[in-house]
Amino acid sequence: MAQVLEFKLPDLGEGLTEAEIVRWLVEVGDVVAVDQPVVEVETAKAMVEVPCPYGGVVTARFGEEGTELPVGSPLLTVAVGAPSSGEEAEGSGNVLVGYGTGAPPARRRRVRPPAGSTTPPGAHTQTPPAHHPAADGHPGAPAREPGPAREHIAAAVRADGPVPVISPLVRRLARENGLDLRTLVGSGPDGLILRSDVEHALRSAGTPVRQPETPLAPHTPVAPAPATAGTRIPLRGIRGTVADKLSRSRREIPDATCWVDADATELLHARRAMNATGGPKISLLALLARICTAALARYPELNSTVDTEAREIVRLDHIHLGFAAQTERGLVVPVVRDAHTRDAESLSAEFARLTEAARTGTLTPAQLTGGTFTLNNYGVFGVDGSTPIINHPEAAMLGVGRIVPKPWVYEGELAVRQVVQLSLTFDHRVCDGGTAGGFLRHVADCVEQPAVLLRSL
Image: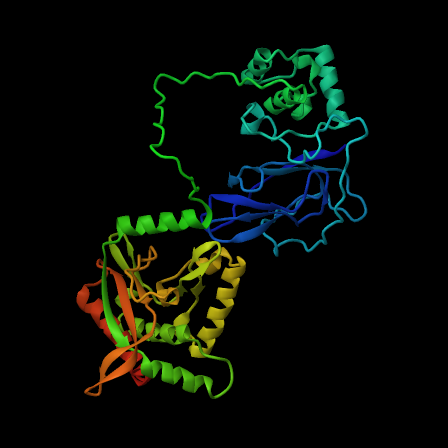
């Protein structure tokens, strides 16, 4: 006897509470193995494949692609029978790909309904069990495929007892549209008739569906209609996380910004000299990062966070340097761990690796959290300056504008030099303007005279 097990959206870590279904990797009727990836979801941090801890036949999928589900809500159900050759019957309990038993995925096999089945064409996604919100006739719940066993159960229930309907809304919908519920085969558990069953029957008969009117409670406020029409874009996934973090930063952090123009001509010359010697290329971002870590060693106040409950400033021992990366999925901030221990070559390689992962959407939550200071090179967008918003709960962010030729007084004479604007936004709770100005001036001095950096190495 097969046992139907429900697999719920697992806790993906890092405090994530929901995920959006990006792509189903299996369909109803497919045979899955233990730890086989069944769905690709996007969280606020990254896209991950979620493996199923059970082996068997997929009997239901909950949620269409693009649907956002909270952690703990049903993902799918699997009919698990006695173990046979090549199949596992027990769940592994694992959550993410790469932590499983290593069992190879079973060949996908579709279990098709027998000839004469009333299953509507293309219906693969099933409605959740009775305890799920869709089981009470929630609008938009997709229909399940009634198999032979389900039809047999439903017929027995109709013959020997009352019509298997729980939701009063479903009864009312059938009554107001003149539909006899005893003629239906329910797609819910044990032949339960769902709202989707009634609506499908009415559409098949060509009957316009009259939705029952549900009066508003006296205390329920009615939202006014918008003054103008427009497109609504949900704030979720990465966009929602960015919105929440930036809003929290503005609410909690009393930030201030200072900026300075610097002559980056010598820094560019130094980079060209480094790359002319052969070996891996050194990126400009890596040199700026190395300058940042040197400045943070001199001004550790800016490598800190504020414990608001304890009313304490926590100075951090390690520098985990975040850098802003714009991708097709939005703005992300990968983190280079222990950046203060890396040289320019190591930093270049790590920036390249994390940037590629950001573009392909394969960054893990651990690679997107834990930063202590952020470097934001917005010069790649062709702009000179900005007032960055601090990446909460950090204490500061250095912004770097584009490097462009400008008139500049160099060694007492007017010359055309490569000039960059540097801006520092800092948490005024951790330091005052003197410290922030000293940090920014040290960064500018290293940009103008890279030899200054040698004193910090």
